[in-house]
Length: 419
Image (cartoon, rainbow, N blue to C red; front, side):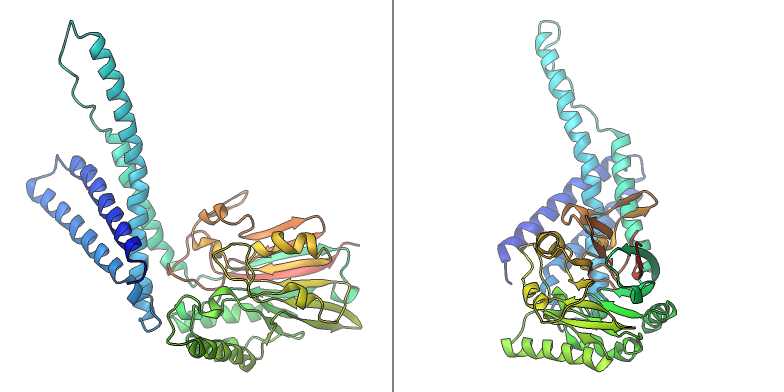
């Protein structure tokens, strides 16, 4: 097993976390009958030990030959239990810190009163409120993740009007369907996916732009859905780029040639669907004599853990010109790192990648997701002077087979002239 020391350390941490949560559980169940306590305690450890056992086999589960449905469900179960216990442990730890501080203060007071009472005060009892709050918080998180599994095909259309002073007159009112992160390898319901495709077509877009991650890793994941996504047509065309998962860097290959063949097959599939894949290049879109320039780069990230395949300089210098430019770049960190300062005439950048972490809160006036601690731009619209970035939170899903807060997205962007 690769990274064996890490796995053993991680398993040890999880086992200690299980012990920690169990101590609180044992405290809270002291009032139950002996049979009830045995049932609850036994169930807890059976589930915990099974989870630990499954983690040992995670590398096998995430190999390219593993069954996708079982893999997703097992991953969701393990991750959900871990996060629920971790959240509960935050409450328990808060209580333990309180108890330690209170015990310390009491100890000092007792020492000062040693002439009156030399007996140390008993340990401060655990707070029932914080203990139950921790259990309820952990259970609530697990329940939310379970509920979110019913949202993974609940597609929503977001209408985004954008205004630009440099927009040519012929493109005033242009309707762009922006899609990202299909992740075909995660799909298990063809009928539901078909409804999503129909929703895209129902928007009557003039132009369809896809910003990467067609699959999780393997080109073969797209085969059952080729005919569905081949139905996507628009008067001005369908254009696409590659995302980090499309390069299949996250699975083991028998040879470099095998990996390269996978990528060649994926590129050919996009051509077969009628999509024009932009690989560090540009495409000129014309309408009524006016021109719009599309630039498409391969995956480029400002985050070190993701490789840089993209070359914006090459795409930009491809030889064509137009007064209005749209860049398709999978990773939104590219925008602030390179586009904003080096390419100020790129009016609009379209990205995906983050998925909104498939977990968060999106309400009027409030938006939160853990992914915001890793990405400054992670969902929706961002502006820097005259430049705009839109981050689509994804059509599909990966890892956790669900969506909490951030539903699968179809973005309809409408371009308007400021004047």
